[in-house]
Amino acid sequence: MIRVIAFIIILVSLPISASSNTRVPINGQLIQFAKANCLYQYFQHKNYDLNDIRNISAGIVQMSSLAPETFVEVSRLVKNYEPEVKYKKDTSPLLVKCFTLDSDPVFLRKINSLTHGE
Image (cartoon, rainbow, N blue to C red):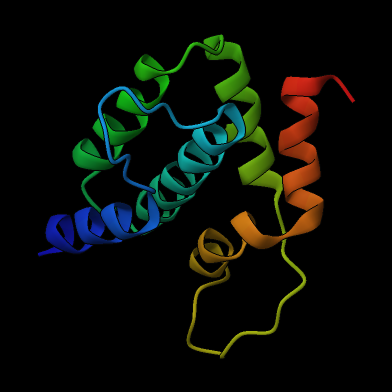
């Protein structure tokens, strides 16, 4: 059941290209990876099975033209990311950040600096 939910969450959160020739922009690839990595960290914390989410993350890295070290840096950014957002008491802050990082200007600037050296 957890695998199905995780797969659905990932599919909904990742933009789908209309054509196989269409490539996701580099920052889009990093955001996709950041979301998948964030869910990986949440699942790891909850002791859920990590095989599917690990395969999704690996696929994003393999399909990218960026160096693997860039994705290691994104993983560090995600791990240290703490959104300034209010959430309900029963919601895990580890899960909340997975749904806020792609719209947080501070996080997006940090992602942008990885590819533009700012």
